[in-house]
Each structure stands twice: as C-alpha cells, then as structure tokens.
Amino acid sequence: MFRLGRSRALASALVAPKVSPSTRLTSIAQQQRRALSIHEYRSADLLRQNGIDLPKGSVAHTAAEAEQVAKQIGTDDMVIKAQVLAGGRGKGSFDNGLKGGVRVIYSPTEAKMFADQMIGHKLITKQTGAGGRLCNAVYICERKFARREFYLAVLMDRASQGPVIVSSSQGGMDIEGVAKENPEAITTTYIDINVGVTDEIARGIATKLGFSEQCVEDATDTIKKLYQIFLDKDATQIEINPLSETSDHKVMCMDAKFGFDENAEFRQKEVFGWRDTTQEDPEEVRAAQAGLNFIKLDGDIGCLVNGAGLAMATMDIIKLNGGQPANFLDVGGGATPAAIKEAFELITSDPKVSAIFVNIFGGIVRCDAIAHGLINTVKTLDLKIPIIARLQGTNMEQAHQLINDSGMKIFSIDDLQSAAEKAVQLSKVVKMARDIDVGVEFTLGI
Image 1: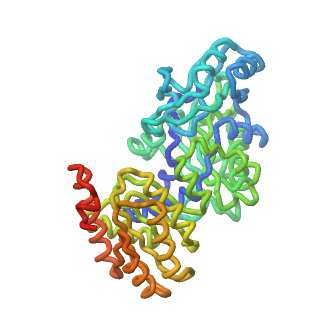
Image 2: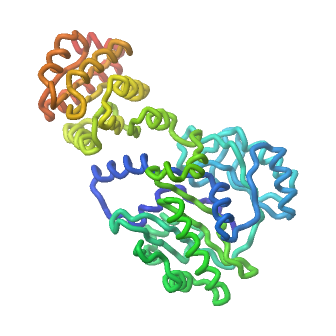
C-alpha cells in the first residue's frame, strides 16, 4: 500500500558518523549547496524512463486536470498526493482545514474535489513549520496493495566518500524511527564506485530484504537500475519507501524521494529545470541568486563571513561567549560592496537580529574596499543595530581608520575574542533596550 507518513528528512543521517556541533553546522551548509530535491511526480517520471515499475499515475495542476487524470488511470481505487517537498504529508493539514495531504479516492469526481481543496493552499506538516508550504500540483496514481514493503536508498556517504545502499525489511514506515528503535533492521552495503552494483550485490540485497523467490530477480534488476539512475543523474540520494512486492508478485516503487548534486547542474540541465523554488526558503533562494551561501538559524547575532571554515569559527566563538548566531552566511571570495549590501539585507530581514558580526579575511579582496562597502551599506540601509567588524589582511590598517572616521555605528576590533565578546555584549544591550522600549541609540550611547 501507499505510505501515509513518509519522511522527507535527511536519509543520509542513517550512514553519517557522529559529529561535533560545529561539524554538523558545516554539514548543513554543504547540504544547502548540494541538495536539489524534486517533486514525487518528477521522480516517478525518471523511474518510468529507466524501465522501473511503479503504479500508473500522472500529475495535475488544476482540479479539472485531476479529474481527467483519474479518468485516464481507469480504476476506482486511487491515491491523490499533494506535491509538497516536505515529509509527513499524509498526517499534515491544509490552511483551509482539509486533513491529510495524501488521500484515498474512488472516482474522478473525488479527484477533482480533493485537488480543488489542495492546489493553491498551504500544507502544514511536522517538517514545514507553522507557515506550511504551497501545493501547486497533485499526483494521482492507482492504489496498489503490497504483500511486503521494504525500504531502499542509494546515498552518498561522507565517511566512506562513496555510494552506499541502505536497506531495511521494515519499509513503509518512518525510517528514522526504525533507525532509532531497531537499528539492526537496517543494512548498509558499501559500493565500490569503480565496480558498481553487480548482480551478486543486488541479488544479495534483494534476498536479505525478504522478497519471495519469484520476485528476487525483478528486485535485483530494480536495484541495479536505481543505482544506474544515481550515477547517470549525479544524484546524492535516491530513496524508495516503500519498495514493494505487490499481491500479484510485482516489484514496484510506491514512493520516491530524489536529491541531486548542485555541483553537477551544468551537465544536468533537465533535472535542474525541475527545481521548484516555491518549496524553498525565500531567503535562501535570494541568497543563492546573489551567490551567497545563507542558512537561517535561531539566534540573534547576525554573521557575515567569507569562507566556510571562518564562518564555523565565528559561530563557535559567539556561542563560547554566551551568544547565539542568527545565521550562517558565507560571502565567499567575492566580498564585494554589492554582496555585502545583499548580505546585510538578508541578515536584517530577521527582526530578532540585535547585532551583526562582520568577520572578513581580506586576501582576494582588500580590507579597505570592504570597509567602504560596509560604511556605504550602513548609510544606505540606515541601520540602527550595532555592527562589530573584524577585518584582517590586506590594507587592514586603512580599513580600521576608515571605519573609525566614518561616525557610523560600527565597532572595528582586530582581536577575534574581543570582537566576539563585544558582539555578545552589544546584542544583550539591544535586546534589553527592545524589551523596555528604549531607543537603541540612546542605550548604546551612540
């Protein structure tokens, strides 16, 4: 049967080693760069194109299209699924009160009715947060009944620096819950990328999963084809949950989650043309368009840094001094005035931000050029919150002088520890001022 509560979380966590908080943040930053997800109906199309069996189905973008798709499927036992890139769709609810983003339907009329209530509305699940995500389409497919359900994923594993196949006999369930409560039910098969998935490897996985004897060869073929898609399309994740043996002894992929390596966009134009930016964080989309690597966090000290390693160190030292970073923002080597302005607009769009820590190493770009961009940005945006700037590298003395002579609310500090202390201190002062409704400038004495 179809799966009601499929997780859209990081399946790669099943094979990732335990890491420190700083390393975990680095991983988050890398995922932000490397994880393109596509809708289920797109994944289904890829599976069909590669000769993999799955229930008959198609996408609809309007209620009228949904009715027509249901007629073409030609059965009175179907499933309609909201196309939203989030886990827990079946247990979610729409902003109009409709319960469940995955529903069993029995006629084209019902397909039209539910599509009308889903399309154009936001689905709220355990992964979307309270704001939910907009449903722009529905996927309608025939309902198949499974004798057995399994979990299978082809992933890139950071530890072994190669592909792995993660499989479990407990498919159709929350795989993260299985990993936590019954880890021995999950098997990880490491693949030599120079050899690939041989018949022997695939057959061994299929047999261990528990496919019946008459389905083992079909399952072997399916596993090999899934791995080939993984290679051909530069995927980082192909997750099938459940991979089923149906009541009429067919091997079918009932649900699919695909992720792709963004570094391969130049050779995967078709796949990346399927990107749905309405499903992504608007601020991260904006940052990506500006060439910035931005991830929103829960703290109140904005960070603007060039280089992922320096960004990690900056966030760590803020936390060591009792503060909480509000974001990960790496402007990379192009810390130009335009990039700095865009970065400040992103950071200050978060009303919680009470101070901004700028930590730039001027190697590719000069510190005095960064200082000019920083000063002009503060003037243009008329920023009221304090900014702590630590600029190290080429022309750092000139940069320090420019900032001190600017008369702006910018504190130029050379020492990293002192700068972090100042950022945390000023952030607390600003938060206190906001709590008692006193002007920030008056409280800071600037």
